[in-house]
Image 1: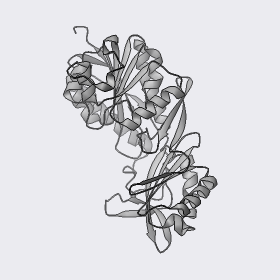
Image 2: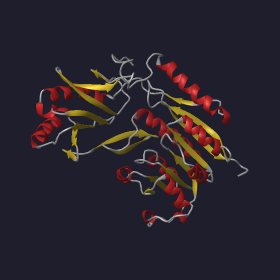
Image 3: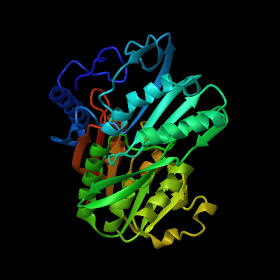
Image 4: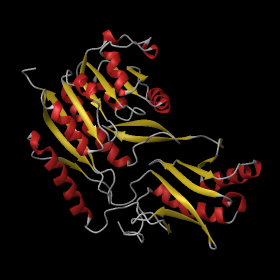
Length: 373
């Protein structure tokens, strides 16, 4: 990726080696971490070097030349103005400069604006959130509505204790996964996978593992908006998926309807609460319509945050035959595998480069219970 701001803007932290070398270094790093578990090779899923990111956030820096997009500097010494960001997908890239032009042509849109966020889809839907240090009035709404038409995008205005949704607060992504199209409603404030192309590869890798099982019921913790759950559900009889975020559970249920799926129960529970419920150490009103005794889990998928899994959840999933573990932090993955490897063997492993030009890497391992257990 060619970018005028490489080495200055802190958004990309790896910019000197070419992408092939960068990816090789990531592969070797994860292989080294997984070597104690007899992992000798990884399936490597690369990314596009540019135009890969479907959501982005930019500071707005005001100077005598007007409003500018800005990002924190690589050396963490303040911010730097930017005139391009080649890592964002085309639907965002093509709207960035026209939006900035209109902001600079309007005191109403520009006044005390300090952040702009973009959320887009591969099918050209785009949601733009403009965040202010002032109250938004009808005059702002009128100009923002005209901006929506000009940019063919939905706009939300935010300020302290104020949220103005002009048209809608979500975009609907359409992804071709496992020879079928799936729809995902992504809300402005919800978590979404930032790299659509690599996200498809992650889901299809998880589906490859699910197809090896193709029986029993499926359990998922940290399910989000149903990113993995919805495509995987067709390979199992019943699915129980949990997530702590109310917004994500709302999205997940909507996504079930969008895709015509009826064998998933999405329940708002943290990973710790899910463990308590399945161990029957605590009852939850949120589970009043779910008979946990009716499930026979053959497979579990976990996709925890960077901190990894808590010990009780590890103990719970170690009783399930098949484990699909998606990790955004290989160090905590390895820590958790030290316990899971007592009962399970790693049968497949992969890395997914969601964030080119950074040190970040996603990993996946598929574990099967040892016969002695």
